[in-house]
Length: 592
Image 1: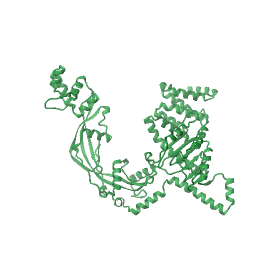
Image 2: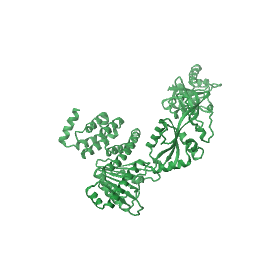
Image 3: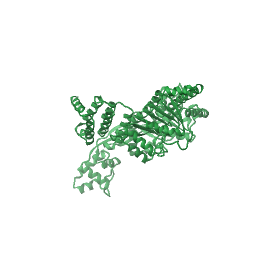
Image 4: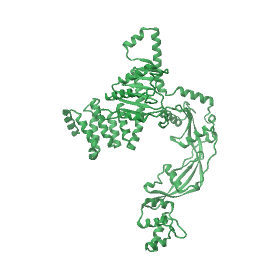
């Protein structure tokens, strides 16, 4: 089945749509549900939780661990001057909790779990028993654990994956697994049975002697990556990505051990045809806009050739048109367009080079930021950032990051978006430059190589380009926001605030996000942004967002409210308001 096959079932089609939507550089060439078999075995594990060791318990365990030769219980009692019955009662409790082994000569010997607990200074409480299920995949050789057993599924009408691959099924001897293996595997499987940092341990385990063969349904997708120009596999169980399974099938494919033609009923000729079609449709949304622009240029050229007066009428009476630029003329028009910006500049360029972002270009950027123009630069061509083969110079990144607004905010946001060949510039929602010119990695004015660019001033088409990149930057920031808050990455969080400001994300939405994040370090930077908005008159004193900003500060309590940076920015914000208006505002805030 392919991504265009109308008979593809709804689950598979949903997976295909999700892959192609989230990763524009990936295309699903073929896809099929398959069944495969795995082994399921019931396991019983004992879970031990803990309390602090008593002084005597610690002495006994330490003696068994550190003294050489290891003393017997009687010898230790004699050294400590304690009655044997007392020592024996404590060691019996430790043995019952599986901290000490039952030795024939009554020497004190710690178990594995005993050593783990001793290092923590804790002792396990009475163990609880849990039943879990081991899942062994004979294809990947991986073993995982699940709290619930897998249900058997009907797979009679679905192709068995093993029929299409050349690989020896792997086997496993469950009896060879150690306690540490079980502890690690259950954690890797996402089970909360063994959490040493919370003093919760799996202390022992047993497997049933009988195992069950389970058939399951997976979705196998054959992927073409237009950026890397290669094929790979993605395997999913419903919506869950099976990473090891995906990597294994990709490896088998590269070793010619998968029969693609039989698996997907797809000949090599059909595969090549699909690849050509995908390449022709790369970055389809961008290409459609470019094609629309090209068609208009062709139509206008044809019309003006047949009627010479048309060209003059269009240029005089209709400022909204398309101009075709070539080679050495491109750079100067690009720079002039940047200099004309009043509100914002958005640039997408696959690569960025110091040869292009030279002193002249840096000065243009500084001048733009000085006059309150926001600048977003998106870049990247590879699907993953760590696969980019042309890194941006650290010195250039530092220089761009040093350009600040009058309020001290980052004036330029340099964002890796990746996975795109597009080369586009959008200025103030009025001008759109697009074509084959790499804006930030190729000058073009010294060694022309046949580049063409369209300068578009037709409002609807400029808006289409803006909406496309606004969505890309917004999706990127939504993902990075979670990371910035979780890792307390202040620089990243501030950049995101500035991007949202450039994209005119509603202020009260941003305030709500800051409040939910409970990240007081962001407050000074939000106050800087509000001060900038008041200075530029993009918000009014009576606006709801100003009121909500002061409420946000109050919500963090007295300690945070008196944070030095917050106090400083709070004062600067109030002082930026005319004195007669400031008094009115303070009274209004007090009333609210």
